[in-house]
Length: 272
Image (cartoon, rainbow, N blue to C red; front, side, top):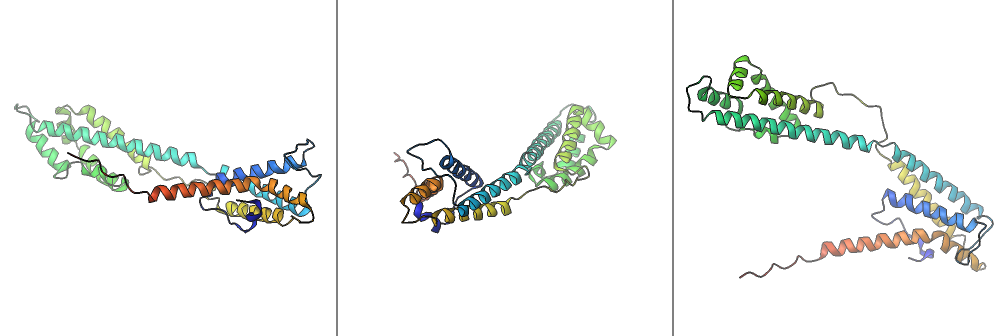
């Protein structure tokens, strides 16, 4: 993209927050370079920016800083940690239910006459798991919790405890109760739900403000070019170079994605 086309171009599709913040940082660096006391043939120099451009530049940096500040307040890491703990507690609960189910299933095959034994194991297995086994561990979390709560109530009955422990399941019960408690805590079912203070969850307003400020800056720089001042075109080209580069990069990326999506599948390998 040429610098003199920028004023009529909207932000490309696929532009993300990182692109916006990064390109504004680069645009700021361009301004610092043209105002620097150091001289270079590759960098046009001016004592000061045109007042209109300078004001747009200041507004652009202020909008960038506002977006950065808003992004910093978003609690992304806390949400990720909570989800990880919920998933971990779900796995532990599932494993504990599988372990108990395996124990009772094995108890149904006992051949000695000890009591409680095969008959009690069969009765308890049917009472707990019926014909569905432990399918409930694949339910959504709330439904799984409700089903598990009913089964834990059965497992708290003295006769049931005695049966499970006689079958060698004392440790199974202990592990299951612990995992069930952690599942409830991990998903927020077994304790009052705390309401966190309101936090910034969206930075859309700040993003739109930065896009508007960027657009304004691009237009102000472009419209300050005069045919009577050839050096003004060189200055504008230099100041807007990072934006032109970003647009080209995003357009190339979009073309690669489109081309890859449209590519035919590889033909099947010949057989025989």
